Length: 446
Image (cartoon, rainbow, N blue to C red; front, side, top):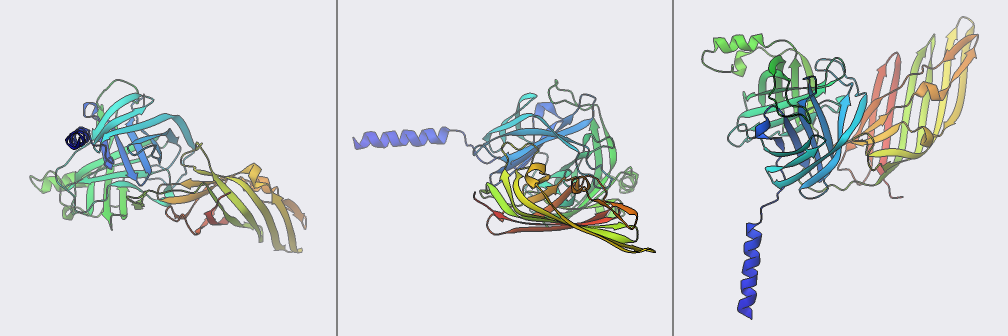
């Protein structure tokens, strides 16, 4: 009997050893080698995954889509696939994305840490890790990078050995999603300089395979990594003639050494890792509760308008499914009070108009709390001038607050602060007025 039990145990062990390993997928670039020119970048931290697909629109433009959220299993993910438009260009000032469009569902099933299947509206694609260099990198910045003040634009960066491969997703002048890429040897383990390229005419989301029709220079890029969490990027839309001249002068080197090049002049972007929580399960609360405050100071004639919006007992509840990724939480209840003070002086004397009103925030909404993979972002989209409805006559002069939508992102704290309070403050000014946001939230069980 004992011998039989031992044989059964041995068979069980052998069967377990024969089963394919299903490990955590590697972060970085993935592709189908039979479909060169289209690829995917994914990063998994804790229970969260963020993936983007880089491919081409029907008219040949390079385009991208993304998905992200909690894993549905140890080696599986399923979430909404989004297309975004109307955001920041390569060299332009910050513009928040205008629209998020639900394209369908993207799912991932990993059979191994470097192999799996991606399924999206274009069908099922066997994918594997893209190995583009040999050796291990001692300095490892692989992951998603962004500037939190410029949400909607980001960069996927991977280092293998002494080689860096990156892509930046953003928008063209017409608001269409577009991407650029660069790849080459690192000048030092923490410094990269290369040509920024734009590919066109390749494979669409659902069409048959076709290689990119053209790959043309779009500018230059340099990256200085201060650490594996922070970096400074400089981008330029100038043609890389300086690099070509330096390469020619350098003789048989395919790429000029960093010291052969003048510092790159262009737009500076302060970057940091977007998904900062590593190798541990993160459990997010179902609700948050706290206070919000908005303070306006608006110049008017010879004086000013001052308006404060105080929202008490604001409750944000997880929205399932999220209607606009990654809007994980939406304001469902709040008590708001608006105080306004209009004051100015003219030759006829000093005029004052004071008042107080209330606003049912639960009906108007306008606030969402975004879980942006490593940080929460508080966003307000109120048309403040419209719902204030504030106008009056003072010494014969009409006074009306400007009515214009306000779209403001406010970073309110890292995503691992699931106990205690998250606080955030943001000062912005523009169009002649100053706007100060303050948020204070704690996890809440209702």
